[in-house]
Image (cartoon, rainbow, N blue to C red):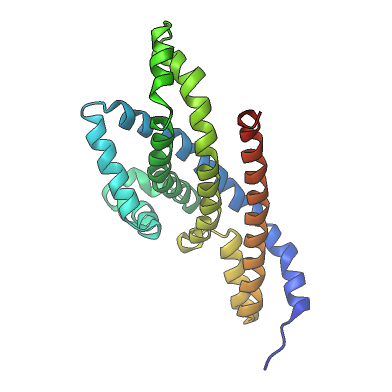
Length: 224
């Protein structure tokens, strides 16, 4: 039975940390863009805008119903064969596009559910005192919907960070891609992959702690 090469694992940590910023940059960019797109999709779903609602349902169905890896390959390898302008897209951009579209489909439904979950009597009361729809959304609906949606959105951000590990299939040397190269060079596959697994685990645990703090903060007003 082989003994773990602890020295190799410890030496690998600073090497992999050098690629962590790229992983986080892709995750943050994907999350922010997905959040913006998801809000637009959710509004279309809530208002049931003719035409756009049907397109939104199709969009959500497709991106929730196909694997993220397939979507990444489609953006990076497939679409450039049809649209030559897309040949300029690199692996990082394709990854961010894939994360954005894939997770916006899931987030849109979560945001829509949070919005429609606000007690209808509150919206009727706000409209009865002369609030516009914009004021209703800003002052009544969104603050309550945010409290409901934040835990779920944080979970999606955690999923996005883990999903960036697929970027190495597009030739991107991020955290997982760097681990693959280090493992191939040393043949210490178990040590390399258990090291990166622990790093991902640590990131997720940190974000889970942030999530609990946010939930507690949002719930303070409802505990008084």
